[in-house]
Length: 226
Ligand SMILES: Nc1nc2c(c(=O)[nH]1)N[C@H]1C(S)=C(S)[C@@H](COP(=O)(O)O)O[C@H]1N2
Ligand SMILES: [Mo]
Image (cartoon, rainbow, N blue to C red; front, side, top):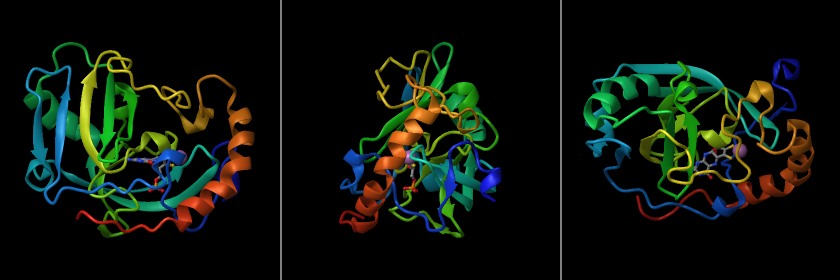
C-alpha cells in the first residue's frame, strides 16, 4: 500500500495521539457540555451545543487516512460526524451571518491550538467535524469532543478538541500563522511548510520522529476535568 501513499509518507499501524511538541503535556479539561463558538467577522457571534446544535445536519460516515507532516500516515480511519460544508451553509452563514467576504476559516481547540484553512479547502466534501472514530465517541487522545478531519491536508490542519470556528477575510487577522505551517498544506503537493521545498522538511522531521513518537506514546492519555 505504501506506493499509494502521498510523497514522503510511510504507513504506521497503530494510531498515536500526536501534536506539536508544546502540546505533548497539554491535557485540556473539557467542559461537561461542550459548545462550539461561531465567530470572527460575523454580525451574530454565537455558540451552538454539540448535541442539539448539530442534530439538524445530516450525519456522514467517512473512511480516510491521516497524514502527519512528520511523515507517518495512518490509513483507513472510520470517522463519523458532519460535513463542515453542511454546517457552514446550514448553521454558520444563516445564524452567525458573516459581515463580508469569508476567505478563511480559523479553527481553535480547547488546548489553545489553532489553525486555519482557505474557505475553498475547508468546504471540500471530505472535510468533517467528527465526533466519532471507529464506531465510538472520540477519545480524549484523538480530539474529544469534536475535531476537524481534513484528509487532503497535513494532520496539523485537523484541529482536535474543537471549540471555535471563525470566519475571516484575512488569515492574519487575527495572526494565526505558525512559522511551521503552510497556508494550504496539501498532502498531494507536499506542502509541508511555506519556506522550504517539501522534501527538505521531510528529512528534518524524519530525524526527530522517533523521539517525538516516544514522547507522545509515553504521555498518559487520561486527565482530570471531564
Ligand atoms: N487541539 C489540537 N489539535 C491537533 C494537534 C494538537 O496538538 N492539538 N496536533 C495536530 C497534529 S500535528 C496532528 S498530526 C493530528 C494528530 O491527530 P491524532 O492525535 O488523533 O493522531 O492532530 C492535529 N490536531
Ligand atoms: Mo502532525
